[in-house]
Image 1: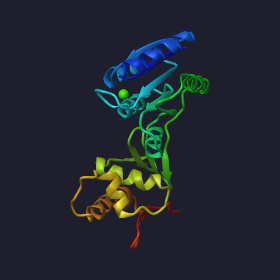
Image 2: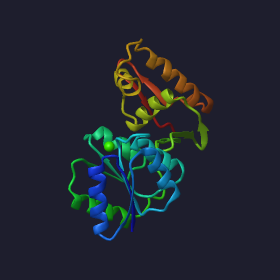
Image 3: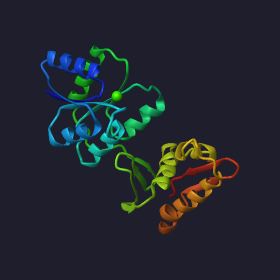
Length: 224
Ligand code: CA
């Protein structure tokens, strides 16, 4: 069994290498995101242990890059940050498991073995509402198979709406999630982006799936 560790903290990377080699595994270590993405694309591994906070490119971008290149090696993400938000984010981008630091080596080993037994996933996570589909790992959106090109901001708004699976999302939630916290412009920018989205996602297909819930916010509904 061959494992790639992408981790910039030498103490953690060294301990992992010694521990996994002690279990009879072959181990490569890369200390930044660029080298990690390269190694994971060029070589065959049974599993990848990927830190999120890396120099070069982030672990999240390594994950997106791998899945975009069609590399489906199981990935166990390590992060110092805890919380649902991070967890959901990395799973959407194609991580297979998630472990918050500090962790015990035995737990990591057990999770890694479980991942390898399960094998590589066959396809990415897809969010869908009716015939509207969004693949977070590839940042790809289509309606009934016709690809829709969105700007990063439009994509961010749609992803948030679709993640809620048809529940109402308030204007301030959209602002907080899609615009950075320093944004002090007009909150009506959300309405503007909702109208851009409708022009791309609904109008050309004769749909009205992005609906305004007066006084509350917006949601995406499936139409028959
Ligand atoms: Ca790190």
